[in-house]
Amino acid sequence: MDKKEKNKELLRAIKFTLISISAGIIQTLVFTVLNLLTKSYWLSHLPSLIISVIWNFTINRKITFKSANNIKKAMLLVLLFYVVFTPASTLLGNVLEQNGVNDFVIEVIMLLSNFILEYLYCRFIVYHNSCDTATK
Image (cartoon, rainbow, N blue to C red; front, side, top):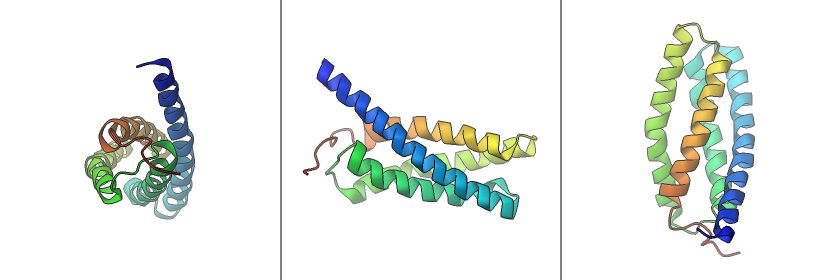
């Protein structure tokens, strides 16, 4: 990989990070409101995760990955990621909660793991061959 490609990948990672921070803020706000109302980790985690995923997918597809690939295919691939991540994070979060870990600590752990895993999955699976293919 030449210097230009490395810079492009670094910029892509920075964009993904900033957009993910905005999704994380949305997820945290929704989680907080729902957690105050329900006092349940999974009833707070699941809706907040879904809302943040929709936000993150929509913006990252257009701004970070600049992909022109089939949107239905990309959505399906992201859905497949969350078919695994959502139950795993919800179950793990539930186990941690039952063992006395604070709900907000659990949510931070899930946000960070989601951020890292989703970037790698999107970059190398969802948008692997379609980065920078969208026309302006």
